[in-house]
Amino acid sequence: MRRAAQTSESVEVAVLLALSGGLMDAYSYLVRGGVFANAQTGNMLLLGISITQGNWDGCLRYATPIASFAVGVAVAQCLKLAAAGGRLHWRQLALGLEVALLVAVALVPASLDLVANDLTSLACGIQVQAFRKLHGRAVATTMCVGNLRSGTDELVTYLHTRDRAALSGALLRYLVICCFVAGAVLGNLLVPALGLRMVLASPVLLACAFAVIFWDREAAEGAGG
Image 1: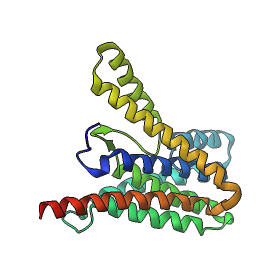
Image 2: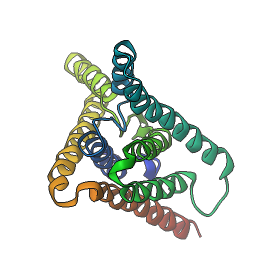
Image 3: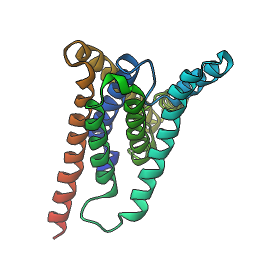
């Protein structure tokens, strides 16, 4: 497979981000009261059910992560617009902020699950806006429905046309899905030992992604110099 045009679109970075995405969703759902950090469609569904049941505490539990996710998208876009020409790429700044948010989440006590879920969703919003492509193809590392649809579309296209590019796209998207599921598995395995601190595995993965982008950029600048 050819090398990605940008390191932020590489398989290595996508794998790390998808593992982190699955782990974050497992954390908020298993440890923080059955809320989805990434899958805002699920939160919207549960919000609608809570409204019909008159469960106003439930409404708050599901509404604020949705709003926080949207704020995260806005924050990432602001970083993109404001950080042009800096030493660090704006996506590296986004990763650094995401790491800081998730470390803070690990310090939030169980009595403040609402705050923890809002911070986690904020981090997810940043990630989904900052990293939207894999080898030039639209891919999400914090949710899987779009990847499943596009991957299956390309797989059928390959079976019909034998277009190798379509097969490559399908395999890349299915790889991201598998990594997301693996992240959820990892998170579930870590819960008994780490509890509320389980989310700290996610900043480790994100820090690795940051390093991959940084080292590749440094190498490129050195070669150019």
